Image (cartoon, rainbow, N blue to C red; front, side):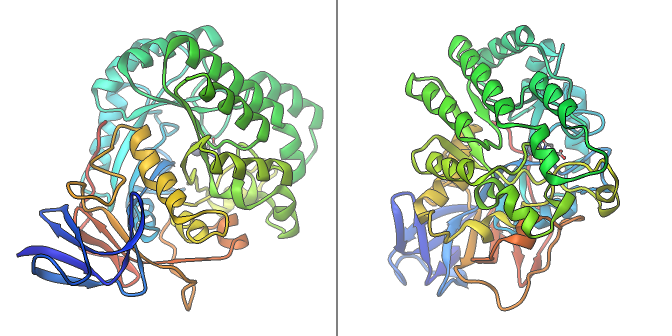
Length: 439
Ligand code: DOR
Ligand code: ZN
């Protein structure tokens, strides 16, 4: 007798989709069996007409705890996660106070404990002058480090190239990957002083953060990665030139990977202007043109992109109304519905980029990120069709360009965390049982 059988679905197995039942016991996947065969189960979940996926790992969310909880809070952010088939989130350090010391990390973990619908990990902030704290952060349980090379929302002060080299040496020694917001501060400063327009307009935002800011920063990071041996991950890659830098570094054996967001894959600046999204589509790095969007899809197909991340970064509607609106928007609930079944994304690539890739990048493989015996029973049961009516959004500030501008291709029916229903019948279910994950 096992705890649960998920029957009648198409299982997204590591080597491709197959009709199989999933047997779950003690919070783990026990076996994948031919439909109807194998041990009896105390409970059954009918997945007919559905795809059974390893729960998505969203390796890039800003759940705004502590200090910015008017934008998002952990219960609302993690409810949105499980409603989007996401069973693990990795949270960014640009909160107040920043998560750039062991003490701040421990304080954040204490705030989140017992309030999360999904599993979670925390990035430690790498900032100017805190190289000496990275060991402490790793010891306190940081999943990896995050560094901002250019200014963004409440970001941590960027280190100079010498400081970055020094920090990369420590990261290499610790074996922790560094996620980089790769926009070069100097290039941003020069470009934004050239556009200084009164009021907000989306095209000016794009001109103030040009593609060269990204390619320069990516080139520096790849060079330091090769020199120091620090594993790196370029967050929210947005340009063909940036992708070329990562591709070159990888071909020379550097441990450099890249993340693509659904918004950079699915929308151009032009689309956002046409849809009249205004400041709702303001994001760093900005939405680009068709050429860069195409190049990003090529980087997805050839393996240069090693993970998808939503960059879920909500702000309040009031903040968006001013002359200097903040950048970012919600996305953790919308990545799967927008991308699963996309004509350019075979199911295997979807699983590689939402589950296996992030699990490998952040030290969670093989317990997470795959539908295989022995793995944790974090799963999403998904109907590959648009739902009959709009799905309730659980973020505190859910609005964003994915919601406004992208077709919904799939519906999350049930999300399991540790073998228990965390989301079903359109709402979070049971109690928040998410656990803190360390590498
Ligand atoms: O648009 C963005 N918003 N980009 C970032 O790098 C940070 C994020 C935020 O935290 O608001
Ligand atoms: Zn971000």
